[in-house]
Length: 76
Image (cartoon, rainbow, N blue to C red; front, side, top):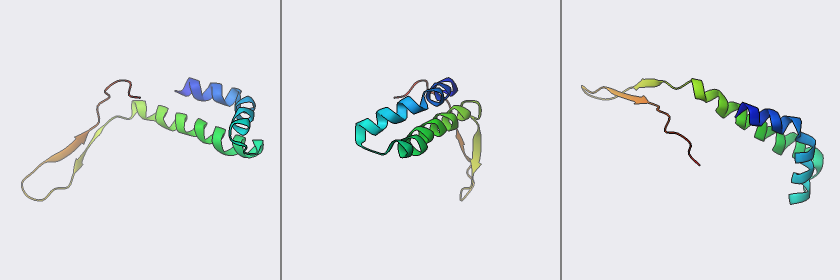
């Protein structure tokens, strides 16, 4: 995912032009908003790949509640 973000960043002007042609948005807004937010999202989610952990949740009564995030593979 980081590699994809790098490629988007490398070709950001071309992608901003395509986005501008696709929806009529000014190119500088497509570049600053759409392309940059796409890069940010890919980098954010790529960062989660090595941060999988569980946590204990507060509960009433003699119970032990926790969450554990397990990767399940590619989901689309």
